[in-house]
Length: 203
Ligand SMILES: [Zn+2]
Ligand SMILES: [Zn+2]
Image (cartoon, rainbow, N blue to C red; front, side, top):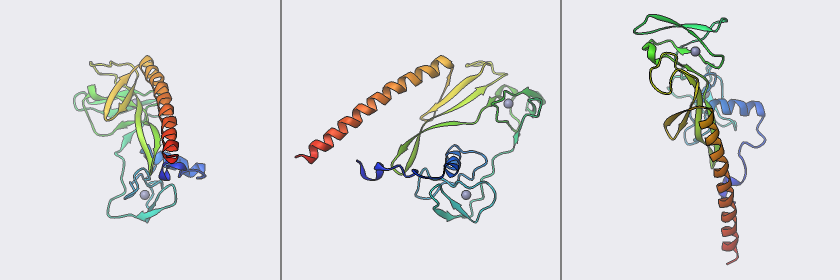
């Protein structure tokens, strides 16, 4: 067993509190998300209402400094009919028909060709000592006016190590298959490590 990695620090945490924690890690706009000094991966899990001190999933608190509570840029949300009218720099107001997964559009005008529907982020996290690391982030996207790849259809934009990879269903499935073999590799390494440690102890 390696140092403090033996036990999940989140074990036994109230599921509702845990949900806020995952929300904070995913930059959920309802959550404060301010990072905790010296504790990577343990942001503030309180909601965006003013609070005198930040609090993480484990109940640790730290003072609110002069950092203003982060305010998400205003978003235009689709109405009951599923449409939203957004300002553009080159075509005036443009009305879009949003897919159900669209999380709304920035209120700041941009070129029509740059308009796109985007879902919330899906973060794929793995536990590491002292918190969690993001393996990749996935977001559904559709760009109705683009003339460039990946075209005007729906795709999954997968961010890996700072690079975005637009993928169709087969591409996503291929990555999932590859991750299964990566998991097998990791289990082999885990068993080898355990053996090396045991051998070390027997010397
Ligand atoms: Zn906070
Ligand atoms: Zn939309």
